[in-house]
Image (cartoon, rainbow, N blue to C red):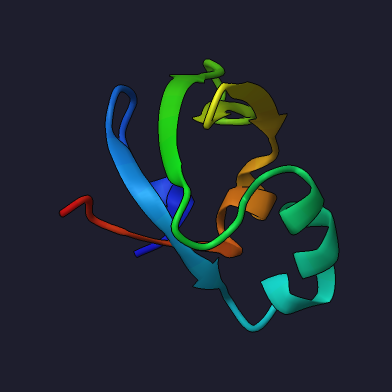
Length: 76
């Protein structure tokens, strides 16, 4: 599943990055999108971009295209 498919108020864990996301994986890792970290979608702009997400105690705004590069898995 991809991060852009997660609904507002839902949480998951970062599982990794898509093939396209591997080009930017160093940037994503520096933002805290580390596999295993809990991630939540807090808000989505009216036109669907950007998304406000929470990773750990950090709030980030990312583009929908970037959210399509982050793989997530359900919390267990």
